Each structure stands twice: as C-alpha cells, then as structure tokens.
Image (cartoon, helix red, strand yellow):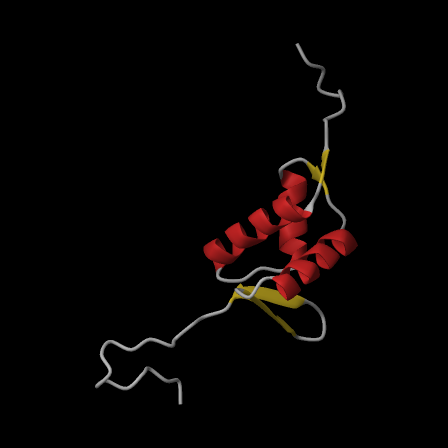
Length: 98
C-alpha cells in the first residue's frame, strides 16, 4: 500500500502537452491564459512553471495559423482564429462583419 507521504512522480512539460492542454481549454472556455494552462498541467501531475508555459505558448502561437492572442498589458488571452469567409453561391455576397 502506498504511503500518503510518498513522492509523486512528476513529468516534465513539452510543446505537445502544452498545446494539447491549451487547445482543450480554448475549446472548452473559448479562450485561455498561460496561468490556466500552467494550473491544468500541475493538476495533471506535470512540473510547470509560468515562464516556461508562457514561452512555449508564444512559440506555438507564432507557428500555428489557427491561434491568435490579445495582450491587455497584464496577460495574454489565447483563442482560435475565427474564419467568416464563406459563400453559399456566387450570387450571394460573402458574409462580412462590416
């Protein structure tokens, strides 16, 4: 029987696990922050530091065309880009936010 004081085996984060958790949170909540991702990773048993998660998410956002973020001066909010460029038939104009 394991001892309650026994050390847990923590795992180190990498770009794949950070992306998976961040995308899950973006789908679930429509947006996420590095703090939410870090907390979710720690809850799942990973060793996650805010600076590392922030750096990895910045790399993912720059590499992935489907990610975008907005910085409000304090933290970044990551979301998926929304595409509204669709047209049913050539006679019907495309949808526009204007």
